[in-house]
Structures are given as C-alpha cells and as structure tokens.
Image 1 (spheres, rainbow, N blue to C red):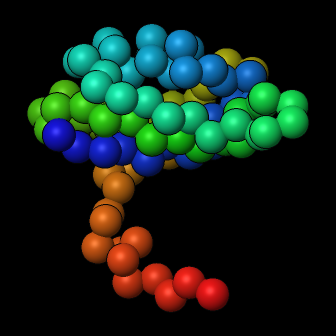
Image 2: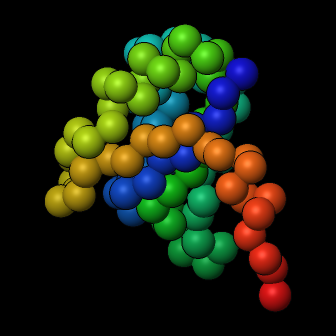
Length: 90
C-alpha cells in the first residue's frame, strides 16, 4: 500500500471527484481531502492510498496535469514518512 500526497487541487474538489480521477488507475483504498471547517471547500491538498503499482501509474499519469477550474498543475508525490518524523514540532 502506498500513500500519495496530492497538492494544487481546486477549491471545488471533492472526495468523489478526486476518487473518480484516481480510480482510472486502480482501486483507491482510502482518500482524505483537507477541507476548511467553516466553508467546507477544499484546502488544495489531500492523501490517497492505493496499491503500489497502481499508485505509481496514477502518479506518472496525473502529476503535472491541469485540472478544470484551476490555473495550477496537480502535484502528485509519494508521502515520505521518514521526512515527516524528522521535523521538529513546536
């Protein structure tokens, strides 16, 4: 199982719309899109879990594409848990 970090999502992105986009490349095991607590709009990023080979296919296909209603390109990266552990929290 691989976890992908997706950024530059448009504000109108929903779990359903992102799931549809990624499910073309395999089964999405879990999805968590960050949304504003008051407005409910997407904060522009989220996490998706897929099987390894499916996640690699999705990352290759979707990284850098332009999404409708957005002037930015998607960034799809593998989450690096080692980097997260090394950060100091205050």
